[in-house]
Image 1 (cartoon, rainbow, N blue to C red):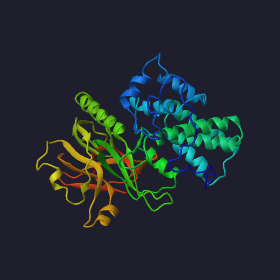
Image 2: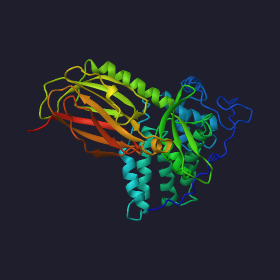
Image 3: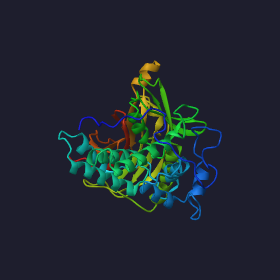
Image 4: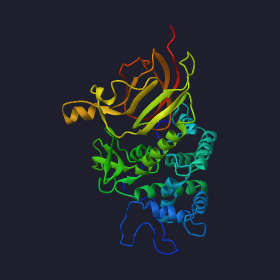
Length: 393
């Protein structure tokens, strides 16, 4: 299916109308007619945790899953942004179902009714695990629209659910530096841009008023948008908490695989003698790194002599150039590292696209005290290193 025929969303325009809650005043959007407002995460956390309150999270999720059209904008904002306050909050998690759905919808064969029903099943499977996954609401709507028909009640429910979740994001800002869109999942920025026919030139991570934002200069478009800002601060803070848990676990747990989110400084240390098969190591340091490296000027990143048996590295963005245009055009993703392990090593690497799909990638191996750099294009957000082993003779 080469082109989905559902209408693209109008940029910054709400998808559906919401009714005012009968439970009292708005707790999120004030009564001054302000269309967008940044989420108050502490207020949302307090509201969704009260079992006797109107905004109790499990109750809101049930109403959304049942297609309750009396949900207002505050209800749905509490669902979308309330996910950031859940114990299982993981803004970087990927799902195999996404690849299966895309094969059905965008493969060479025209999908059948059974295929569209399979898309609905796969989307429901993901939403049962993560009820804020915007693309799954869209794919479920596609499945219903083409599988059951535009007038089917199931399509109407799917349309409301998708539109409501998109409105939650649209209500958080206008994408400007002063009022960025707030996201509960980093990859949702690409989904929102694709829904509005916007193409980013490149991506950079920055801070606006002390909060982390993904910043996208945008190619020329009919909306006249030149730059979009997405607030991913809650995602980044969850990453910091994940790093802290790695630090706590590293003193007692070793493994043979390491997953690095984009924007990470790490040090690992061998836990056993280097072998020609998987060698265990522990994480000594794993912390956020939000700088953009200047490519080919990385010697100052590492000490002259590191601790024996360790590898230190950075998985982050980098660039180089003498003009703004060159710096912009040369943004890449890099793994820069140095080894203080005697001998030459091999390892396996897989890299994850921002849509959640993993793919194998080649590497040059590891050489004692040699600064190594692996480079990828943009569009990836996580690297997996595994099977660290002695290079065979």
